[in-house]
Length: 483
Ligand code: NAD
Image (cartoon, rainbow, N blue to C red):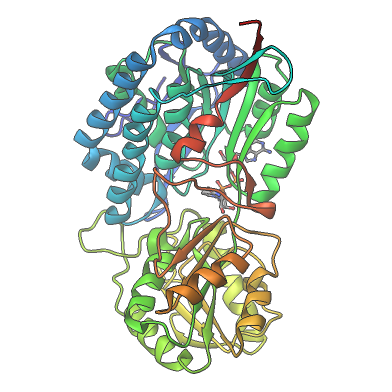
């Protein structure tokens, strides 16, 4: 396990309660996107390592599921406390491997830890049901049992929160897990593991498999009959592949996929509040969020004032290495993401869009892109169809509500929409017409561990967070009882 040590982060696979090398000894590098330098290397799990992790999970399952909900709850509560005690260290690790500003990373750690606290509280609320059958003499008794071993595959944009949002409910439900963190950001999950151990998570209950052969590894796991759930957060393209793979053994799926969020500013909106909301919805995580506002539809009466104020705010943002205090815009995760953003802007401009601020990468080392506002963006621009995943606000004007709703809904995605209006009645009526799993009504942030997070259409299947998130890891069993 020879790797450059960094911040005491283990760099092996975690299987059955131990950090180990990959069975073929392979490792891969983890980069710092702000400096383009290698931070360290981590072990790369093979398919054989995947099987060892399943063996460990299988061995741990009955003991973990058999512990009382209160005992599991206490472990999760402790994990929340320990995680918050290490908030600063974990935030630095996130910034090092992901590039986002420390302020974003600190918020992420707090958000991520909150899933442990929330599911500590949910673990003791696995409620069943009993009723009298309407016509037979039976009683209908309904209980919810752990679904079984779950494979959790997470993305790089929130390396802590997307993991805890799955681990929290899985452990609360009594399920052991095998976690496959994103190859760009495996260190955060590896750094979380000693915290989980200290909190009392027994060997085998959480196993971690960073791998640069994600496709082969996850496919093998999905086709092992011991796996009963795959919970995935990532792109719709990969989600689709996993859904195909899950079909063979009819594995349960939870899919948190891509988005193309509209951000709607009505004529009667409080413009300052809308700009504030836009800064969060667009710039949290440098726009590298499935919930990031991707298309702004602004009523023609307020378009220019909204564009001017948003531009002013975006222009003043401090760009730099995320580890520096005061930096608001860190580096994008890799060259590919930065180049994609550059392509979207070039495409829109070539088709007639106008740049109000930004519009180019920052020269020098690191994958930085300047906060950008585009107006007069034509309908044919690619950035209106695809996730931008970067700090670019794309504005269009609208004239009537009907036209705006039909444009907002004209996408295969349906994760989140934002809507600003002072008229709550109008806001609720329009919300109902938006084909999205979540609506931010006069708010630029919807993520909350207590709320059911998830999308409709090709943005996903199932919900994470809230009581619904616990139910994803539970199987319903009905017993017909001769009372
Ligand atoms: P990605 O789909 O490329 O990767 C996600 C994870 O899947 C990573 O761990 C990756 O290593 C793994 N993976 C890649 N190919 C695989 C394969 N063939 N089989 C199995 N696993 C594979 O996504 P990303 O680039 O890491 O993250 C960005 C995407 O995630 C965006 O589309 C974003 O919208 C989405 N996202 C969605 C949510 C949500 O809650 N809906 C949250 C965060 C991110």
